[in-house]
Image 1 (cartoon, rainbow, N blue to C red):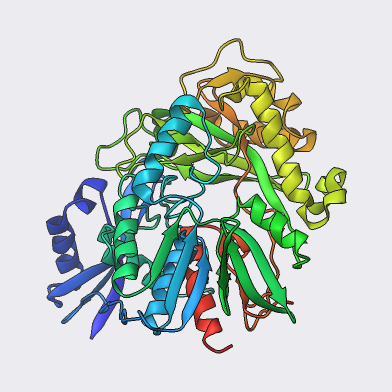
Image 2 (image 1 turned 180 degrees about the vertical axis):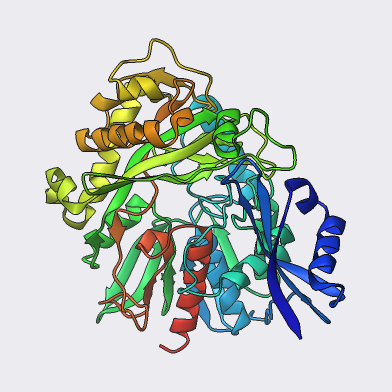
Length: 510
């Protein structure tokens, strides 16, 4: 028998397992010999900050048994997977568990080789279109944070995804933290162990292997072309390319494979000194050393349109996430300790289909071309080498070009510019009005020590690859399984991983 209950502790006591054990013993009057933490969250609504712990206590309380039952698939039926991000890797593991052989084609490099290209990107502004923050082993999440947030468990087993990360070396705390996070410094090693498991059991992973052709006949996928000259017969193809693979959308459109335009979000990265966010959220002058760097979540309405924070990175860094020359794209990441001096977050608003009418000639790719046009304007305003246009926060509200700019974690560098003249007018206006609302609700947030860096444009795909709700195959092409973020069906590492698993469960019944 077990009992589930909540206790509240000071941050110092919540960091000490012996103190937690004493509190559990006191709550249960010594009734149960064992306990485990189900969930841990911070309540910072008052100056007396507390840590809430949801506890399961009982006679025999342990984590549910977990094991990946990986079979020998060297001679098994193949399933071809395009992309080695979280969707592709978890799909590959799911294939092996049911006795199918995954053959993964990844346009980028393995995590170690990829790191050298990121160094060139940060230092010299040189973009390798196949090896960058978005493309390569592990996908966009590997070198841009490793947040494991998700809002819904309707799409699959969240706990299994988290347990899989722990199985391959993730910190067990991600199983109960309210906002689990692995960290960019730890994810590469975890991804390498996943790769080793796939290869040891008979799966294949091919790097530098770019999808350049797809051939269909009788409404069924028949063959793919890799790197322009390698022709591979396929029966079941999982397309898990991520939301930045514009060449894949163009390829599918050219082959008359049905696509749909969809809304997406676009805006800026806002960066503050971390101590300002700590002071705002924890109502303190100096953060308690037992509290993590503070985060925040913003949701505002401006004339019926949402404006919100996205991918908030306490103790983080703004990264250059362009996937081609001549564009500026930003994202954020944090190391596992979140110990950098800045906090950054995307601050975005939704771009609806009617907002992209200037690119209507591109049909279902209209949002993609809208997105690219803004990124190119930012590149031009930054003057090249991936320097990004930027503006102090108060100056942006007051329509003033900043005379100078604060220190910023974005390594290629920032250039003072009028973001109202660079961002689409409706986007700049919504962001400005939302920040004015923040003046009333969170006045410490509104400071010229903060800087807006443009542009945050890859929050989600502007294209959906439609699929049948039951079979998860493309609505017209048998054997083609659009998957995760690149297909418009996920939004982050965990949801992408769950979608990869769902696809495999669906294709065994096809």
